[in-house]
Image (tube, rainbow, N blue to C red; front, top):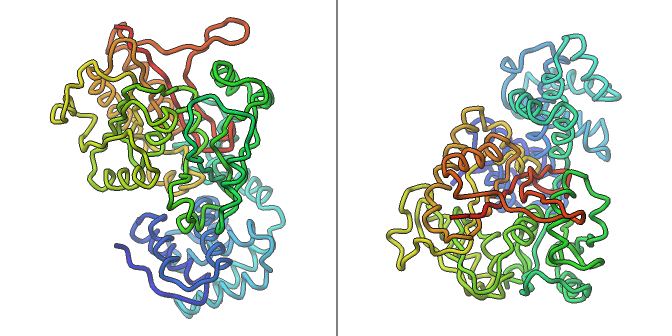
Amino acid sequence: MIKISARKTNPRAAALDILNLYFEKDSSLKELISESLERSDHSSLDRRFIFNIVKGTVRYVLRFDFIISNISNRKISDIDPGILNILRMGVYQFHFMDRVPTYSIVDESVKLAKDVKGAAGGFVNAVMRRISEINDPDDYLKAMLGKQRAGDAKVLSVMHSFPEWIIKYWMEYFGKEKTARVCTQLNRIPKFYIRINTGGYLEQTEDMTDTVKILKGLKNIKAEPVGMDSGDIARLDGDFRKVFEPALLKHLKKGQPVFGEAALLSSAMGIDREKLYKDGTFSVQDLSSQMAVKYFLEPRPQEKILDCCAAPGGKTSFAAQLMNSGGHILAVDKSPGKIKILSENLKRLGTKNVSTFLADSSAAGFLDRAEGEFLNYFDAIIVDGPCSALGTAAKNPEVKYRRDPEDIKRLSDLTIKMMIACDPYLKKGGRVLFYTCTISPVENGQAIRRFLSLTGDRYGIAENMDTAGNAVKMEMEIMPYYLQSEGGYFCVLIKKN
């Protein structure tokens, strides 16, 4: 376990400890934050302050480093790491925490600098004061980048703090405007969603009373139902609506809630202290994931479903819920630790129709050791593909700095391997829901096309019919601005023979 220093009273010092460990040891940011907050006696207000500073500093580190380097006339590599993190924290507070007074940011930054390296107090004071004089950070950055004659990719990289290779990759497939829109959304404070464990199949009633009553029982967090009905879809992004609307037409009447089981949280902090969470009344699951399971996997009672890379169990448990606890789901993961987490979550939710199995689902014959005969057995398979997770950058900002172009090809190849390994277990006429939490054409649509070419005419992409009678493929690159949720991708395949 990673050890965090016990700086108890000063929230900025606690945030600095986390950042120092993160940048020094490339540790898990989530684990560092969790351990620090669990071991501290900070108030809930200070905990939120620490969380926001740490996440925000990491989210915008490339942008901040560009500003710091220009203001200080020093290379980032020439600044002491601890002092650099103090400066990064300071820039974040100046530009994204309007309620914190300028004098307080400068004063607290200098105090921290003197604790880290006494002689650096003057340097930090000078840099912080110059940064505090920047009236419009965006205008400042554009001016500096203009002087450097930076190209479009460099400008977007600095402005949005995404590595330049990711910007170039997205621009190649989506263009400049769409790439900027994706980056903007992934830099916003993320929304967190829960799924109420209500039971029931796809049809939803218009009565939200039960969900509202459940949400009123929350003590440590606030949540409200997702206010979207089938009539609201017409106001959503056209690319999204084209694929989503035909799926809704199959299951919902006008005015019925689209995400009847979902609620939007004000914050995810404190969720594990909720009695209703411990009792299995709800679980955390993003809207994109809920949408893919409910409207595109379309699990049915009495079906037999294989779920690969199933941990932590969001899709598994939702599919089981939509099946009215009928049928059977075999949930597979290759890590004993993940199987443990999966099993604990299923037990907490009271899921009865799921069994777990430890196996590497990218290995040929991975169910050979399982009890039973599974060749041509399953009605549906969920392939939660191993991916770069770039669509989760709002919640996990560090992910964008920890990937490289080689990862994209490697993960795409692993996906193909997994799909091929699953093929013998799906019956004729069965369907595959392929899902990732990344925005990456090579890992997503191109991987599907490679799989289709390798399997001849055995598979095809499933289709729905729109109101004009046109066939619409059940496939979508889920942009994070569609639902203000995680970015990702899904595709439904049908095994023809």
